[in-house]
Image 1 (cartoon, one colour):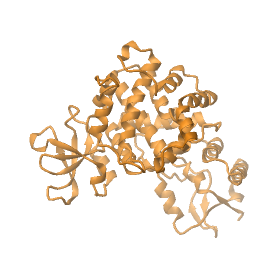
Image 2 (cartoon, rainbow, N blue to C red; image 1 turned 90 degrees about the vertical axis):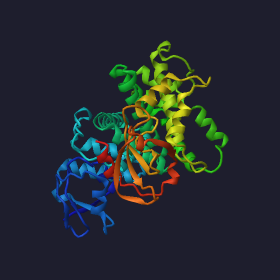
Image 3 (spheres, one colour; image 1 turned 90 degrees about the horizontal axis):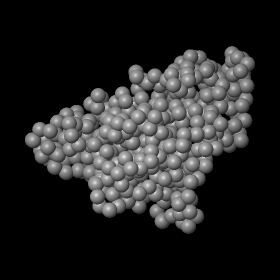
Image 4 (cartoon, rainbow, N blue to C red; image 1 turned 135 degrees about the vertical axis):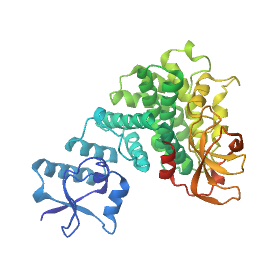
Length: 405
């Protein structure tokens, strides 16, 4: 056998697609045959268990696969960014077009989705950037339509529980809640929904690395960091324009999303309407995420900050967001009249009466199985939000996601 190593990243970017080659260990033992489909990162990691490296046999690879591996190793050796390496995988493997991807039956690996967003948003200079961004947005859109409560729960939990991939998680959360508000509350045309979701996803693309650094940085931003923050909207527009984005509403929304003034949405041009919605969603999501220097706000406190504008008047965009995701959003923690602590799993009939799953009983002990409560019933009414830091229970997120359906 003519065995050559294959980087793990090359397998991870193929999740959900048939392998174009067989995988072997250092002795040539077959681990996964050609055509195998890995659905999650966990499956790949299980394959890697007790193995330092994976291999493929060049003798059984077709000519284009030889070229693929040669190109791949050249990129690795040149310290090419992961996004460009992933682009090489896509160009050499027969993948389905973005618009034909069907996620209706596929399990969602939320950590993989987070990593995918992280990879895409860090590499806007890649020639494959626009296609990969479309694929990411298409996946989020399908998830939001199929199970919006589950998507919100997963993203809010990711936002509140870790800060290493802050920029990507934040971008996804803002994009999703803007999309839900446009579709279910404001009822704007689908073209505007697509523009606002794409703009929200890429609003900070020129400072993705900096955002991740600031999330774990104990010191205030340095002067050069502050300058990058101040100019990021303009620089993001330039980056996206260079990457082939030609939607004027998308670009205008990003350019104005930190400077658009308060006021009725109907009186604003379309681009500024999108910018205002993104601005309020950005503020809301940022307050929910921890930093090295502060703890996250509760969902209710974050919503209150977004609900009122700079003049302490009700903000139309902020109000739309509250109607879309609720005062107590899926993934947030609440205390019930029974003194039980629960996690919100589904939005309810109105913004204050969601479906919840009890995770801590009235004696302060974790429940063996989440107990579903409907807070529209007086005995299970919500009496307070509970900060994320006060809940020291390991959540069974897959089980909670089942309750979201």
